[in-house]
Image 1 (cartoon, rainbow, N blue to C red):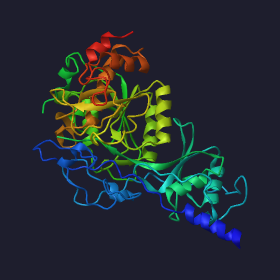
Image 2: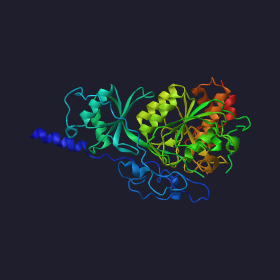
Image 3: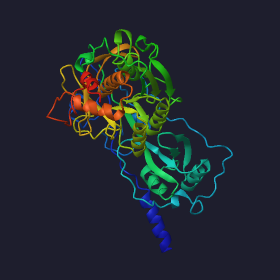
Image 4: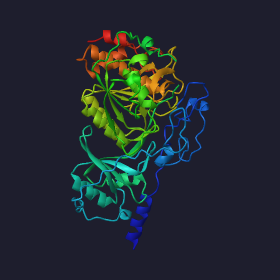
Length: 473
């Protein structure tokens, strides 16, 4: 009896809910006439300009894991009349003829009798409250065995090129906290990495003439990214917009079950990179491979990894990631392996304010973290700060194509697009240049804007594409 009491006490302790850091993104219109602002962190210095979110569990709520519907926030100027659909990754049922056998190490036990073999994790960042992502060493049978042993559902599974293994999205049907399940899964040697299915948000702070060409020393009459392949992971796009005519080489929908409601953000990012006509982008002639992985400004780790895998398979030279979320080991691995393939990774540093935590994937090694400056080279007030900021580029009040034709946009999302387009010019001029060489050139030739040397506000300084091209080694 004493032994049973000890076991039940341990089970109760393991089932305690783990507190999570509030979601990073929360968006509203600013008070400035035409300029729209993405207020992504009410704790930042820019919070005074942003209305408070009164939704339970939202950013600034200080609560635990938030159910996904409460996190769907409109990033764009006109709020929807009703709640947007939840971006649920597509399910993938296990093969019908797969039999779940006994797991390695012992018979199947009830999930309520499982004791965590690793400390429960205090999970940072918003995440899907009833799912975990796990890389598994084994076949479909092993996946089924793990699910049966730990009382989980196999919601999707696929072979990830960038992770180099099978990625499984397990559902938790009995309400156990994510941290508890991650700790329990550590008992099975076939599970290699175990992570929450974190939620990420696009970095639009949106709203006059595209002054970017002048500020980054790029002659718009000479600009070209002809035939350079650039992948963009973003919202859906309006591919009928004249600015994108002949620009989109291919598209991939990483969340096909979710209807497309918003097309503005992705359309603006693609247009700033390679737009044609009146709204010419930084690298006309570049070929955009567009992966839709966001709806109403939100996505999950599983969906983003699917989009990254697709992008890596398209033999692209650049991947633009204009979104921000918490640190996640799976995303870190995917970025590291993509860089190992020679792909240049460009990401938004974030619009969460000066006191916000680091934004990922921008803060990972090998990713070019971009902050936003205005027409006078001043820093966007809402920009994240930190040692990870790599370079500055125009991103405040720029005209860009959108789902409604055109708009004035602001945010590190769009500064990242400017950098991706500028790098496409470098690759077009010298296809043999490596990712490392280009990264070093950008750092060495940037025009210092803040304290001498690299700093947490501007990084190395303002992008100077003319100087970076001249510095080719």
